[in-house]
Length: 267
Image (cartoon, rainbow, N blue to C red; front, top):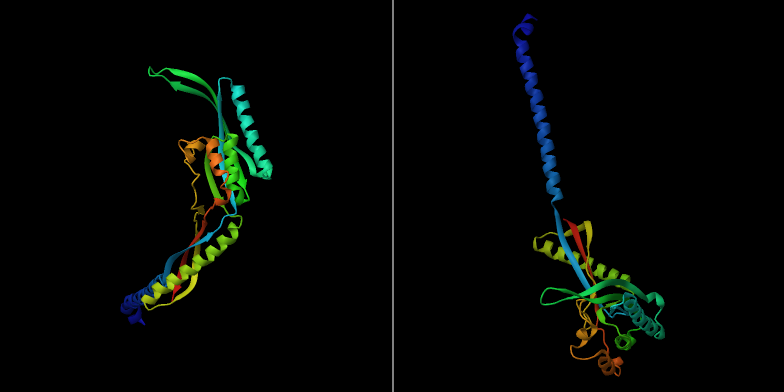
């Protein structure tokens, strides 16, 4: 009894501490191995992208145009501008274009100055610049509308964008093809490494633009219609030339695109 209390007690305590440290070290090692295993497991993935394009015929055209008038009297400048706008709206009405598809885009009223060689500002009047957006649903009448707009005094044909009213339908089709393309790409890559592709763990859509390949009437938005169509021909001459060629218009196709980014598990 005295032997235990006297000489063996410190040795016993050291032994207990040693055992506890061994147990803790073993637990920590096991946890470390588990964490490493989880990381390695998480790394068994493959990340790919897939894209797809569908070419479709447009069924509507959106005209962006503008009328500009200048007069020393601001009231007359606006009145002249209103007169041109009315002619354009009358044309749309005559072509059975719903009023909701003929809307004002913007209106600017600014003083106009020119600069002399001596640097002096000379007031030239007030300029009224008004933009209109016209959506044409019957593309067979594209040339007819364009010609009549020019005849009515549209000063700027800034842009014509061709669209499809079934964009959602074609977008869904393109997205499905993009996902299929992503899967096929992942399978091809995994096969080269002797592995197979499992379930998808993450899917994200990549935003793609939809646009028209056809844009002969487009400009940067700063040139007059006569400059967009012809640098040396008047609006009336252009209209007369195109008047007999309405059926020659062909808008081409627009591209509906979709893209996805997918992460697959590797097996």
